[in-house]
Image (cartoon, rainbow, N blue to C red):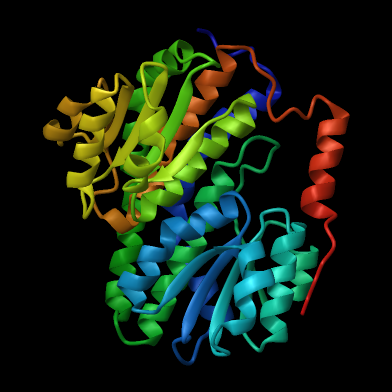
Length: 375
């Protein structure tokens, strides 16, 4: 199919997917220096909270492992409402709250920052809007710094949010003495090197994911499952289906699939199993086997050299990055983005429903116009 004449919104989405590669290649050291100079921690926080809504929550799910493994600090990735209305009041005073809001206008995330500050916690906002409400409320604001800022389902913004959080984790690790300056620089180089695998993943899978997106029907069930940092990837991938196609999909934690979505899995189901090398690869293979037994079209996102996992899938998607599991969300989010793009474009669907002014008005009121509650 020729995509040169597609609607501008779809061009924006595709451009955003492709722009992730140069961003990852070029930004790690720059973002880290910004974090180190502006945050300038003197001691390790007692706890880190990664808060946000939608993609801005999923990026916390994707990077929590980095904070735990690299910095050795207890970290929670919480939806903004869960933090602001329930748990923020009970967290340790010497916590660091990292609030991500690309627009800077999301009511619940602004509320989370206000609650954190009211309870004496230090707050960092990651946003693309430095004059926004969240920037005014947070102790410190850092520009997400990505260039591809046109209306479309979030792709570059998600990767930029992950990058900021990786750099925050590394700064804490250096402050706490778990990583030396040289080790931090080596880790930043490793992050930048993931760009090569991201590009290879895009190049290797365009045709495969186009065919899969065209084949899947609106009546089919689409399920993404992943564990550890890719629990976040599963949620992010299903969100791209919502946004790009206005169709229903679900994301689930790798183990929980066997306890829940297994019972609605059948021949009308596409089961995407996110299976990078790492702690849960064995369980991912077991879940592929079970989904096959139920007649599902199984799609394995697995390392290009992982023949054992690929052999279990009806559609193997070879991945060329993410052999360090903590960094795997950088590459492993790409297949979900591409699948959502092709799924929607090949069916001539309308993105997000914002062609209907009422849909947009209600959505914006819910996200940007909600009442703030600070207790």
